[in-house]
Length: 367
Image 1 (tube, rainbow, N blue to C red):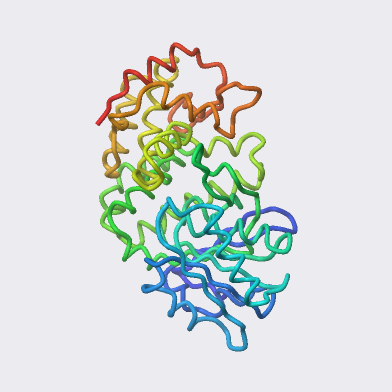
Image 2 (cartoon, one colour):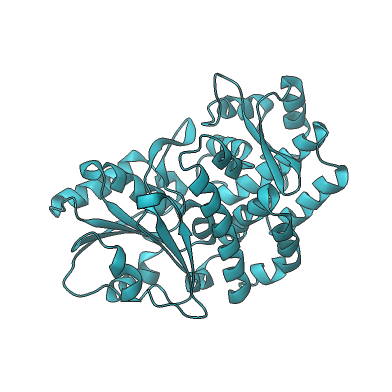
């Protein structure tokens, strides 16, 4: 794709499965952005009822002539991230007679991307798909790395597959229509990258949070680029999360428990992760790794992003533990948590004393 000063490109280096991440304004309607990554002439666009009125027609107009184009418009919301919804995609592919050279295109946020990727991974044992994420959270996290799947009532993302896209096309203009609550939810994942791996990035985020929440285009593009660069590096080193990639889950073990207990969609994923990161920071302090001042700094940047600082009022210690024990990072019944040995330095820890964890869960503020 021709480059411009506003378009920046990264690569996820996975040998023959490597793919680009294009980041910039105006990508949605550019035929040269999509065409190189189509497997054949059959294209199925998957989106939802919120995104379709905003971007579906503009995206279709940007496709090259001569394609056989279908569309699936799903209901919106985390609660729709189920096998039943994925079956709607499979039904549409089969009804249209799509073959192994078809391409699925995920136009939407993380829920659409995860389900479309899982549908692609399973349809005829694997077909091509392209990610076109339209929310900040999906642009900096779920669209990159090949994690696909659906939720189960007992746990988030418990059913899925690793299936890499052919490309990720991040049109930053789509953030202009993003509700402020969803923008804040996306900022949780951006903050995560600074906390786990890049203290300089964290310092930059502390200084730029006002511009980010004000939807300043240049500042957002820089945040997206730096977030994707970190994720691409981690994924290239550990595609299927056997080790270092698990560090990308800072706050997620606590956050997934909140989402599962409250009902998917009651808390946005990024809101739960933001609270979960603060819980992880507090636990890290109790283990002697972070100072009080460092935890206060974590709390400050999470608050500045507009994220909640307290867990749900109706969650007891056992409510957290029941879901946390099902976490995919756990091995041999040992609870593995992503914690912070320092700001910018995350670790996997599986020897947290049970009473220390229970005390943290009991003491953490509720709202």
